[in-house]
Amino acid sequence: MQKVMGIGGLFFRSEDPERLAKWYEENLGISLVPTSYEEEPWQQDAGPTVFAPFAKDTTYFGKPDQAWMVNFRVADLKAMVAQLEVAGIAVGDPESHPNGDFARLHDPDGNPIELWEPKEPE
Image 1: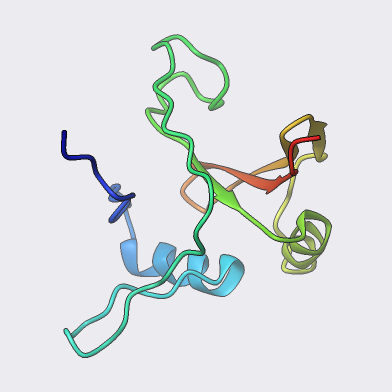
Image 2 (image 1 turned 90 degrees about the vertical axis):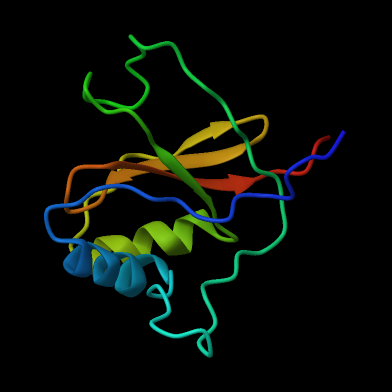
């Protein structure tokens, strides 16, 4: 059976896509979409990716009408949270779980973002 190799893109709507793309670039380091085939797109580091459909009535994403949430792996959650807070971005209190540490925030459009610093299994 052929299998996909990974996520090739995440596409979603925004009232102001240029502003939102710039916010992701400035605050999370995600490069803007290339405007030519000569430019390189954002490259993510290899690592685990969880692909998990949730029940339609989940409260995990926040707003009941929110259909998706993105989870980004980070190398140093404390440093990332500090960086975001310096930029005036509210971040929820980090939580520690056996598989890593997590923190939540929202982009300017109100989309939920989860940051994850994975832990090696013990």
